[in-house]
Amino acid sequence: MSGSAIEVRNLSKTFGGGRSLFGTERHAVKAVDQVSLVLQRGETLAVVGESGSGKSTLARMLVGLEEPTFGDMQIAGRDAAALRRDGPRAFGKMVQYVFQDPVASLNPRKMIRQALEAPLKLMNGYDAGKRQARMAELLDAVQMPKDTLDRYPHEFSGGQAQRIAIARALAAEAEILILDEPVSALDVSVQAQVLLLLRDLKRQFGLSYLFISHDLAVVEAISDRVAVMHKGRLVEEAPTDQLFRAPRDPYTRQLLDSAPKLRKA
Ligand SMILES: Nc1ncnc2c1ncn2[C@@H]1O[C@H](COP(=O)(O)OP(=O)(O)OP(=O)(O)O)[C@@H](O)[C@H]1O
Image (tube, rainbow, N blue to C red):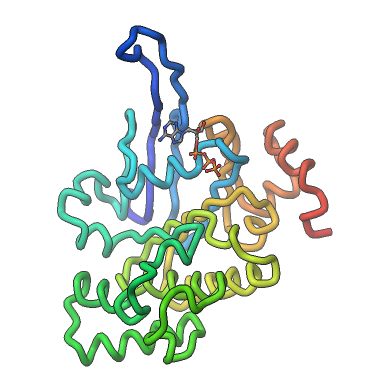
């Protein structure tokens, strides 16, 4: 177990099922069906699949937004549920979640200063001077100007807001980031810039990324390995080059064939 950032074994989540109050049978959905995978430290593992394949449910279970029906989840070698019981501070210092919609993930009524200062204070206990210095470093790291601090989320474009959301995730000083479609809401040219930034930050801070995406071009650009999900199941897992060059599973081939224009020549 040591050496892995995230490890899940037979992780499963079923929604619905059973009978309603009126006795009618409810249709059960196996959103995640016996998934096992490992994110190694320092690695970017992409989880790819079309809408409804269970990617978000997997990510949401890891951060405690959904309870698994069964299976094990370990984060940095510790049982994820036990880690959560240590409290949000301890958990947030291990793993951070970056959402698809950056503007919605920032509180519209709070200045960016408050968004960045809160984790520095709550998670790291930094005094005012240290917080100020860290905020400057974080904005620098995500290539945003210092006056960002005194502005509100709506004053930024989607790409800028996502840089700020990434800075906030980094403020906790967690080494594991779960990025749930982090560039899907952005224009293609902005996507490329944010992907480059994520790649640099990973090197600079020694991060590990679980990168959720439906977009094969994005996945090919960012990931070391790819796990393909289909109807809740993990159908194939391979190093990125190998998966794109020689996909083994019929569903992976279908997925690649359905997006040929997005792939590199
Ligand atoms: N809270 C819920 N209650 C009932 N069913 C759910 C719930 N959340 C997800 N599902 C179902 O679980 C399945 C997997 O959904 P999930 O959102 O994890 O897929 P996804 O691959 O992330 O797709 P998308 O990219 O569209 O979010 C879908 O059939 C979805 O309808």
